[in-house]
Length: 114
Image (cartoon, rainbow, N blue to C red):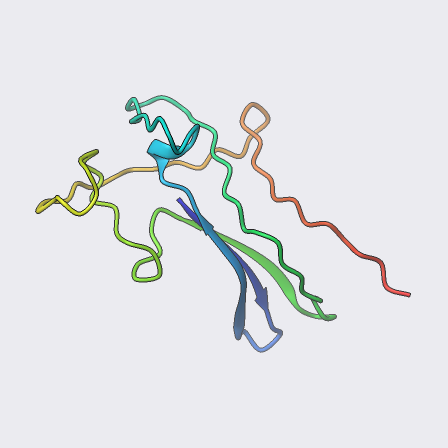
């Protein structure tokens, strides 16, 4: 999964502020990757890294979540094979849960102005 923090200007133009990625097999550990079980719900943390931005009056904060951000990040063929070895790809179906039992959130610290 990839995520972006975006500053949306009143005229509709956008500026990407930060972005991050996590491959599903590395959701728990970089050292011990594990593949997904179809139909099971997993929790992911996507680190957008440290950043700062002043969202001006009239601007909107947008969070974009996607299963791909190619060519910024390498494609994922969704086969579970070693990276760079696939000659085929598979369609992946993802669902982002955001209900009472499966809350989704983003942490945006606010620094007050003087």
